[in-house]
Length: 227
Image (tube, rainbow, N blue to C red; front, top):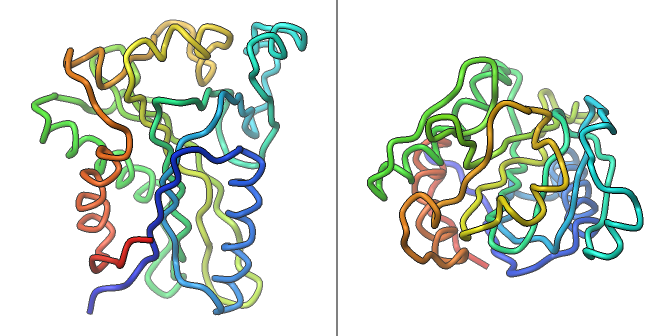
């Protein structure tokens, strides 16, 4: 029997608000009071520093961040520093990984990557993985970053996921916020976007709608009522 999941899309949500919303949903799922969720959204310009904590990978000082209107958060996901901003589809799957069925963080990460790889294949783009790095790559350019937290349940057996993926859609995004950091701490490779690869124009909300069937198939959810 297929599982159900609540899906929502928000054109713009402050990072702090989205982070608190994730925590609230995690608590609700743990208590058996909420369904699993997939939050799809865009953020205003934001840098997030993950648990690896490499402040040297932030290249701009506080004044430069303020001048550019970029906020900075040190957060509880895995990974290094990354950028979120308009023209990027961010997905936060908040899912219960049942201990009885086996907990495999590696498989979860690879499945998230495959969702994006399959969407890109649908657009005629050959994408894949790069050894030693998470995320989705087109040659030596990263088009989607992934950073996850596995929250240990207090009232149920298993873990609940939070944070997720950031998929670059709009042309030129790599020359905006990404120029102020060493993305994911990887100096030797760059980033790209869907529009830069294809030369076509994409709407972020439309991409969210089109990527959803791939997510539902790989994670074995029934088609939800979208909110």
